[in-house]
Length: 113
Image (cartoon, rainbow, N blue to C red; front, side, top):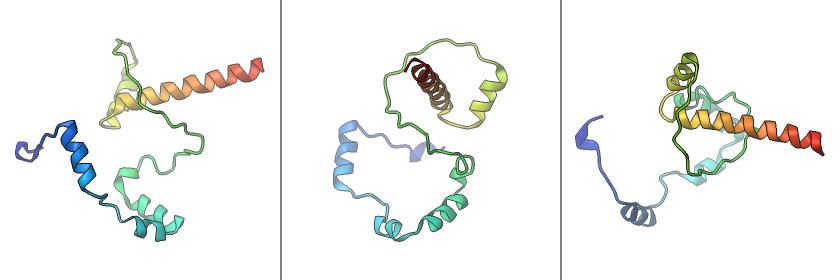
């Protein structure tokens, strides 16, 4: 990344900028598209390449909460896999662990009830 393109904004400046500007998305054009057209465009988008065929129907919305820094020992292949998925790999690891936790809790609750 070239340094001359990096800019910094304070939180107040970002809020002011968002209040002044409208979204760059043409929502009327999106609303006019069929689900099939949207899927074709998603499949053509390289950012969706690894996620397009994942079944998200049972995904949970997770709102950010404060995180604690810990030291953990993981197998190298697990670390390599998540790092290979790019920026945000630690967040993805947290999401996988959260999914495991919620599924385990559901099973436990179903047995108790």
